[in-house]
Every structure is written in structure tokens, then in C-alpha cells.
Figure 1: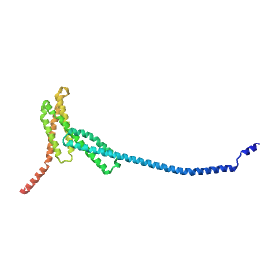
Figure 2: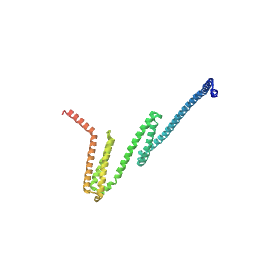
Figure 3: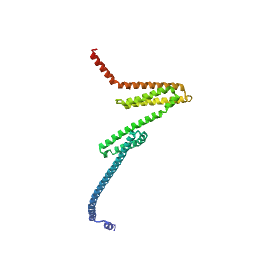
Figure 4: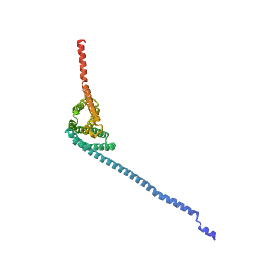
Length: 281
């Protein structure tokens, strides 16, 4: 009985081949559908990626165009304010100049940085023109602001004249001479043909600031000697330093004047030589 049962459960060999053929045939049918679907899916994904990248490029381009337009607007506003600044300078409105200049400087820095970020989006000549103008205008504004600050310090020092007359009459003549020499030296430097005018002016202004510090300390001690240590000794040293500075300015002014007479000396030597030739001596 067991043999009959085992025999009945066994399937014919040809039945297995039918299953294999069915699987192969079914796979072919499925593949015939899946391959076109996969190809279409790949094409669709490629189109999607292309459109997405195109949209990103368009959005980036539009953003750059928007930033360029904003930059143009800021540059236009800065140009108008610079013209206003030049008007203040022309009419001597120093406080207005200073206030507006302090507003313009950050704006110029902003323009410079944005232009640098958009360098690849704007013509090279335009970029270079923007950077050159910003550098030139910034340097001029800085120069004028420094000049205004110097004039303010000098103006603040003017009331000391009354204090000097009251507290230190012994220095009145010296201080007056220093002020005269100071103005004469600045004028000589500005009128000279030297290539280092700014350096000479800066050196002289630095010396004047040291002198003003010494003079201010001298007057403070003179006003109340008992409130300071070694008052007499410090006053004597300060007075000697101020008087020496007066002599130094005299020497500096003489040297500047001598520089103006170089052509004069050359002309004299030429005339003397000509005279000697004519007389035979």
C-alpha cells in the first residue's frame, strides 16, 4: 500500500517542464512591459532633472538680475548724496559734511561688497569703474574728515589764549610765535612742489599735537600747583620744551624758505659767472 501511495503523489516529469516554460514565457511577457516602462521612466526622470536644473538656473539668474537692479538703485542714491556732500564742502558746511559723510561711508562699503559678489554677472569695465570710484571717493571723504577734526581741535585750543594770558603770561609771546610759524609752515607745505606734502603735513600736525599736550599740562599745573607732584620742576621742563619747540619751528620755516630760494641762488651764480666772464676776472 505504501508503494501505491508514493507512486500516486509523484508528478510526471513533463509537468515540471510545463511550469518552467510558463515561468519563462511569463517573464518574457512581463519584461516586454517592464522594459518600455523603465525606459519611459528614465526619460521622464531625465526630463524632470533637466527642468528642475533649468528652473534653478532661471531663478538664480532672476535673483542676480534683482540684485543688480538693487545695486543700481543704491549707486544712484549714493551719487546724489555725494553731490550733496560736495556742495557742503564748497559752501563750508563742515558739520553737515561730517554728518552726511559718516552715513555715506557704510553705503560705499556695501556697494563695494555687493559689486564684488556680482562680479561674474556684470561687465568687467563696469565693475572696475565702480571699484575705482568708491576708492577715490572714500579716500577724499577720509581726508576731509581728518581735516575737519584737526580744525576742531585747533578751534577748541583757541580759548587757551585767554588762559595763557591769565595763568602764564611768560609764555604769551612764545605761543603767539608758535601759532604764526604753524600757519606759515602749513601754507609753505601746501604751496611746495614736493611729492610728499601729505607726509610732511602729517609729521608737522603730530608735532603740534605733542606741543598742545605739553601746553595744556603746563596750564593745568599753573592753575593749581598744589594739586600736582613736583609742580615747579615739571613747569620748568614744560616751559623749556615749549620754547625749544618754538625754535624748532623757526628752523623748519627757514629750511622751507631756503628751498624756495634755490632758483634764486642758481640765478645769482649764473649772473656772477657771466659778470666775471665779461670783466675778464
